[in-house]
Image (tube, rainbow, N blue to C red):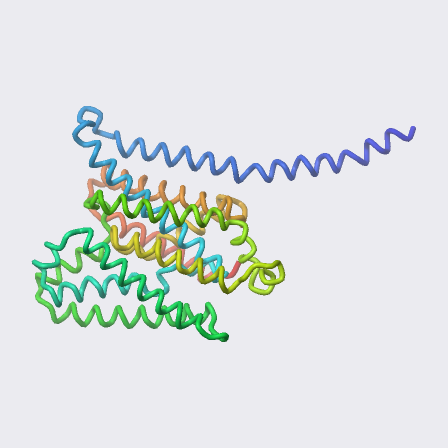
Length: 339
């Protein structure tokens, strides 16, 4: 007579355990589906309409695919990390003025050196120079903002916005006084393009992105703690200031490399990062980081495939991405960007 109540009392606990196990396995299953989707769109991009001439067209498509994967992963990871330390889903590393600084670099180079010198500049030299300038800017900004005891991430965001506006205004002024032919060259460099990325730069960028992603994966538990806020992180034994500064440096490196490779994509990270939170169904970085990276691959590669084979390259992929991500940005502003 006593065994039946005991068994009955155990059933809700067993059901709860089963429900928890099922809920814990959902992010993993979703990551597997995202991985399969990324592989599928990559295969379609490589083989669609080119099976008869795959040996001729294949290497070029592989190079473009590698560029899209590399840039997509860099932007996705940097955005998730930046939103973690700022605790805000409507912010991206671009808020620090990297895109405006990239535009200023291109404009000043054409204004000072001329179109012939800029076009004839070796891609590795140009890449190294652009990354060096953007990293120097970010290091100077971080050192100044984190050098005193009263500096904060909010001040970093505000200073980044102000500097971005300043760089954009200066670029616009120089573009108005340069030769119209030079202006066309500058404008062409301000749109992200995956069609002509140097293989050597791809290799260098891949090494940097893989190294930083491995670092971020090793930091995933500390990142989960940072997500709890400064006071909770300090109480749990995490050096919030030091970890936040390290994350910002990694963000600056990833954004600098991706921007120097293909050009600026302002809101793309905002799009994939917020989709990753929804798809992963968890705030744990062990799920959010790979989900954002896989979503960026699906979005970029799938979008480029549709653009080429459906619309016949009548527009630029970055324009479509910026349009869709801008809508997401407005929606997040309306709903509120706080977690």
